[in-house]
Length: 153
View 1 (cartoon, one colour):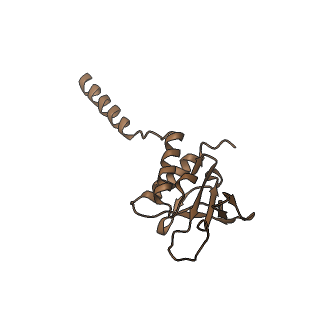
View 2 (spheres, rainbow, N blue to C red):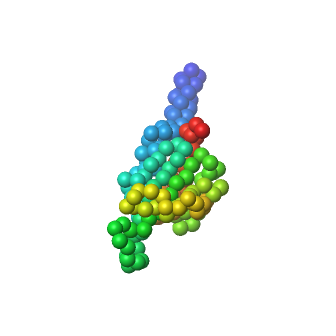
View 3 (cartoon, rainbow, N blue to C red):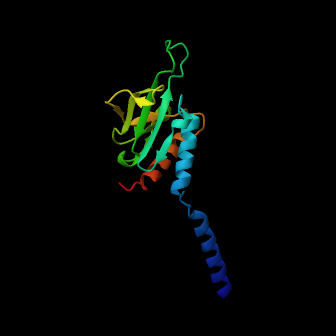
C-alpha cells in the first residue's frame, strides 16, 4: 500500500510540473515583441522600434514602389500605443491585432527632421502584421496582454 501511494505521489508531482507554464519575464516579452515587429510589420524602420510596458512605437515608411516621387526621404507614418490602455488584445482576420479601444495612433512623420508632422493622430483599434508564420498574430496578442500587466502608470 505504501508503494502505491509513493508511486501515485510521484505521478501527481510529474503531472503537475508539466502543467505549470512559466510566464515570460518583462524583459523577454519586450525583446520578443520588438523582434517580431521588426520582422513582420511591413515597412517598419527597425531602428525606430521602442517597446516598454506603457508605450510601443515605431516608424513605417512607404514600401510600395512608384507610389509617387519624393525628395530626400520616403513618406512615413509614426505609430504609437499604450498596450495597457487597450483593454484585451485579440486577433482579427488578415493579421490584424485588435484592441478593445482605439489606442493605436498614427500620424505623418518627417524622416528628414525626425519629427511628427501632424499634431492630430488618427486613432484606430488595430495594427497589422504579415502572416508569414502561423499563430504569430495570436502570440503577439498574448504578448501584448502580458506586457500590459507590467505598466505602472
